[in-house]
Length: 137
Length: 139
Image (cartoon, rainbow over the protein chains, first blue to last red):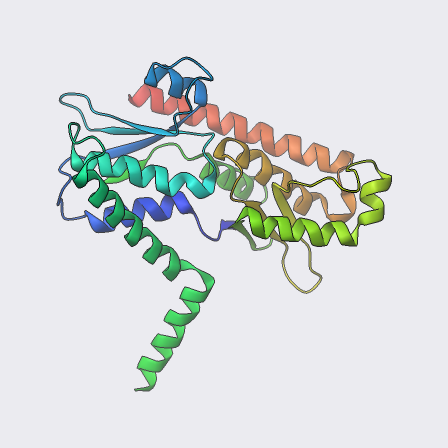
């Protein structure tokens, strides 16, 4: 059985869902689509090779926002790109990269790092020790 | 609710588990490029002669390890993937490392290894196309 010890994409998705599960800032569902660099350029309407678009969010009237991620982004950078686009979803289409966007992005990244630490080998061992200690008391 | 409808990493793992249900427990870990560079350095020291005699790398050339399979007699093999590898290429790296596990450490990059790798990659491409088609129909 092959298992991925730590999946950065799934962890970021679960972090966001945990943070905003009671509705909160986002009323609509948001879907992430991982697409090729060529498709990304088509969506962003930029000529190939001019700009590297790692991610974007598409707001369409009457529809749920959709996050597009370039599959050329390294696995280790995926969480940051998802957090960036999710911050746009929270701040809204007209907020740009302003104060509200910055605060949302910061909050998501802090929560992600916390989840990541808890899921690391060291984090899991600490939780196990804590449970063992609680059982003793 | 945030969801992802197409995750190549999960598809390749599912494909491998379907193809090789008897595979021992193998963990895939994503590590940083610095950690991978350390492993590359150690491996290079260990197999210096082979690397250079096979003309795979020059003596002072830096090696980029995208993935590595660690075989240990006492433990199950472990797969390490360089976190700097783009998601698009991670699929191929996972297929490559799983092929090493299935073909065995002795097979190296020989014919048996190549056959297993091609079988995995072909199965992935079929699964990929099927999922993409299903998603297009839904949309």
